[in-house]
Length: 587
Image 1 (spheres, one colour):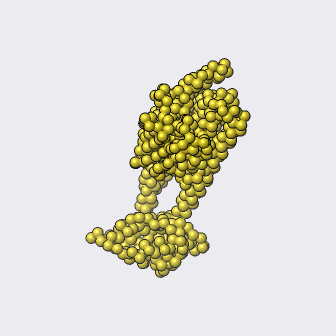
Image 2 (cartoon, rainbow, N blue to C red):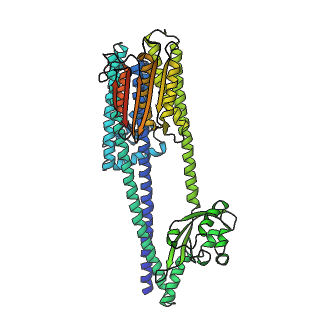
Image 3 (cartoon, one colour):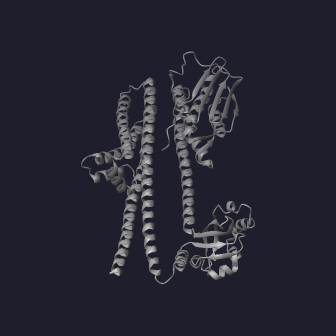
């Protein structure tokens, strides 16, 4: 009867252990699905944002160039957005059509392997706070897209009727910039909400796995203790306790050792060393620490030997508080990566008498990190290629404009406008050129950028009859792509204005100065000339030309201040803080 009771108790413990295991496996499946769905929405937001930016950019081109192809490109860019909208609307309904949702997400350029998880996550958790917020931002963004389509149709009608005036163009451009700013804000909020959802999922997964793991450990400990109780029939309490701890040490997957405080001799090493390295316990105990050192990889040996030479020190605990990682040769001749974690063993008087160590095989983890680094390098190469191709594509556009200029009378305003477009394109080209030439792929040298852009404009616009000499005094400042593009276009407009308008009617002593100053995150750009000054009717608050409209819009976008002095020549002084710049995120 007692034996039956004992067996029932054991079966209950094992059944409980297995139940927890099944629950953990099940939870891991659904948590993996939730993570995949969250990752899909984050990736999908990137495609959505890219499509939105392309749509607005094409609409800007359409307003500027009145080329019907840009309007078609604008409509094509909205296909991705429409697909995502279609998926969201059916999933939000009381009777969702999952096939329509799947096709919508495919149209939205989402990864096919992630779509089912995205549908599952949206359907099951659409009313959870984080995803509910994300859905609200998504719906708001689609409302703005609808307004953008209506605005595009209005522009299209006016252009077809040839009723689009210069003032209308400027107004439409400002409205498009406002649309872009609103959409970027919603994109950021959506991304933040999804990221918060991801963090929430990670937190739930971690806590659940932690609790489940502790429960499994608890149940496992009970089973182990129960097994040890059976042995107590044959051994007294002292022998049973000694056997229990020895059993734990010998069955550990990690190698556990006890070493003297001088770091020269092993006093104990667990049997698992044979599984890890292939050498017997006796071989290592006999050879001491030199036995292991003789098998450390040559590239790691100098570092480990340098550490050994410091044993023992007055502060031994501090010396061994950090883990050491190195490669060691197994009996088969292979090298494996191991992690060596150590702590002090103290006597009753709290005096150190030895070092307890735990050695674990981390070869799989090291290989995984190497794979991640390799993948990161591949992505850096890809990003470099993207910047290079963007630069080449913009150069092709500039070249096409150059061909178009040959068919235009050089004395007309069209010729001048084409040159201005080319210089604006070149300002963006240089940003991408500097990015793929830089080490970080995210920041450029503003000093080098200004020098190259100024040189380009000088070569295109300078006139031998009216040579403009430009003096440059530039601090070495780095700027990321988010700030560099609007800054570059702003600088382009200021410097082009000098070449084209500052010295009308003058052929000598045409001088300009470009000054760039940086103090912490505050950047000041000064562009001055000794020319004829601005006309009295020019007002930056109410710009009438595209150039001054861009200057005003870009300075506001960078959240900077623009000061103009036209008493002796013209002097523009633009100041902004990197931390205050109102530039939308690339995400």
